[in-house]
Amino acid sequence: LGPSGSGKSTLAGKIGEKFNLPVTHLDQCYFKPDWVKEDKEIFRKKIIDAASQEAWVIDGNYGSHTDAFIHRFQRADTIIFLKFSRWRCLWSVFKRFWKYRGVTRPDLVEGCDEKIDWEFIKYIWTFPGKSYPRIYKALNSHGQHAKFITLHNFRETEKFLEDLIF
Image 1 (cartoon, rainbow, N blue to C red):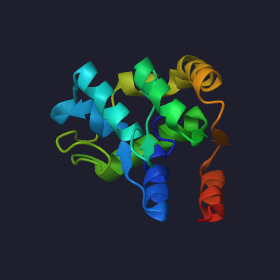
Image 2: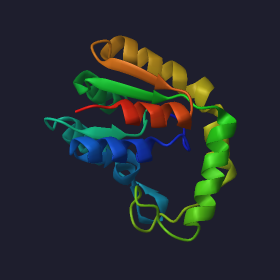
Image 3: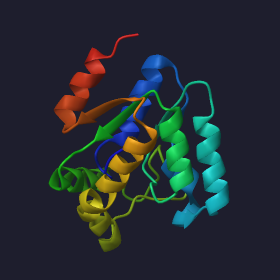
Image 4: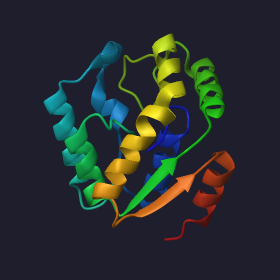
């Protein structure tokens, strides 16, 4: 979990690779080509199917899709929250835009070329105020059994990955 630009997809991929686990990027489940949103019920089913596997890594938030959010938390044994600063996330998003401008990132559906608009910037800037309370509420209600890890920057994330053992 965490704001856009915090490295959720990268971290999920590295964890999946290290432990040979399937990785689900929720942005791939939510968007169809040209940034068209998936039907809400189909999206919900994709999340529930991914979280119903024996072992998995899922990256993304989508807390407004409450039942699917809850299903992930109920089934997770570890929840990692990338609680990075707004400025750091914005910097990362602009860096990512430069790297992938005009093409599709590996963690998105083909046809969703990298873009930045004011709505996206506003989403990142308001994420702590809007999404943190929702995340913490869901954790307190449905994720208390899980190990909860908060990482605050890329250095902590790299250290976390180095310390992971089989």
